Image 1 (cartoon, one colour):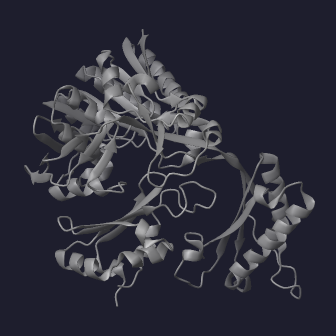
Image 2: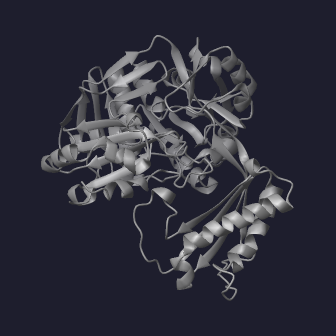
Length: 451
Length: 99
C-alpha cells in the first residue's frame, strides 16, 4: 500500500494545519501538492511567474517542509510557481533555500525542469513530432518561436525519476496535476487505473469532499483500488462527492489523457467505507502506443491599456450601448487619423458593467441598472501606442454627448489618470502534444544539496 | 415553462483547460434529472453560445443525476475578446434557459 497525503489543491491556497498534522500522524509515504494551473490565464506562463504571493507561498511551504522532516518522507510540488516554467521553478528553489536555512536542516532537493526551447519545439513541429489536440489553434513555426515560454507537462515517469534520486524535496516544473500523486503508487506496482484515478480525485485536495476549503486529504493506493479520506474536522467524502469530482474541469468525465496512456473510469465503483472514506475500484489504465507529453505555450499579444469611467445620469444609463458604440466608432477613426497605426494593429472595445459585460451580444436579459461601469479596453502593438490610444479615448469617456444638441455631460472618473497600463499581455498559443522516444528527453533533472 | 435553474440543485461552468468550457448541471433528484434529460436539448445549449451543435459533447450521467456539456471555449481563455478568465459566468445563462 502507498499512502499519499495531499495538503490542498494548490500551494498558496492555505491548508488546515491540524488536519495536516493528523495526516503526518498517519505516516504517509509521500506529501504531494500542486503548485499551479493554466486556470488563471496566459499571463503567468507568458511572464514565467507565480500568481500567488511569495509571502503565502513561503509560509505554507515552510509548514510542509517541517511536516516532511517530521514524517521523513519526500515532499513534491508539481507545476511550481503557477506556470511551471524554469523561472518559476527557480523562484520556488530560492524560497526553499531560504526556508532550509531558517529551519537549519540539510536538504537534498531534486529539481525537474519542464521549459522547452522554442527553436527546438519549432524544429520538432517541422519534423512532424507535434500533433494538435481537439480545439487547438492553427500554428506555424513562427507561432512557436514567438512564445516567451513553452512548457511540457511531465507525467509519472519524470516524477518517478526525481523520486529515484532519493531527494527529500522535489520541485517540479510543469507536470500534469495528477502525475505528482500517481507516481509513487505506480512505482510500487499499485493498480495503474487506481493510481491515476485516485490522483485525479485528489489533485484538488478536499474539493472531492464536503468542506472543500479544508484542503487536506489522504489517499491509500493498493493492488486493486484506492481509498480517499478527507482529514479536516467535519469533512466527509461520499460516493457522490468523489465520483462527481471527475466532472470538475474535465471535458470528459470518464476519460483522462495522461503521458503514456489514458484513464477510463466508466465502470469504476464507489463504495462508502464509513461516514468519511470512500473506496474506489474498477478504473482502467490503457497505455498508448506512443509516448506523448502535452505542450503549453504563451506568446506576447500586444500591450493593454484600460480606461474606466462610471455612468450615473439616468439618460446615459438608459442609452449606454448607443453611447458606447458611438464612442468606439469615433475614437477608432481618430486613432487612424492621428496615429501611425492600421486598423488591424489595434483593438478598442468598451464593455458596460452592470449592463452586458459578462456576455456581450449573447446576453439574454435586460434590466434598468442604477449605474453602469464603463471599461475601455485597448490593445496595441506597443505599450506606448496603447497608452496613446488611452489618451485619445479619455475625453470621450469624460464628455461624449449622446447628441450634439444636448449640454456637454461629464462622467465620473475614479482616478487621475483614469488610464491603467497592463503592459505586455499574452495569449495561449499551443494545445498540442509532443512525441517522445524517451520520457526524460524533454526534461532536465538536477539534484542540489542544501547544507 | 420553468427556468432550468428552478428545477436543479446547481449549474456550474468552468474552464476545462484554456480551449474548452464544461458545464455541469446537478439535477439533485432522479425526477429532475429525467426532466432535464428530456427537456434540455443539446441545440438549446448550442443556441446560448451561438455554437454548432456538432461541436458540443453531451454526457447524461444517471448515477450522479448530472447532465454535462463540453464545448470549445467561445473565445480562447485570456484572448483579447475573452470576458471571463475562469469561464464560471456562463452557468448563469444556462440556468436561465426555459425548458
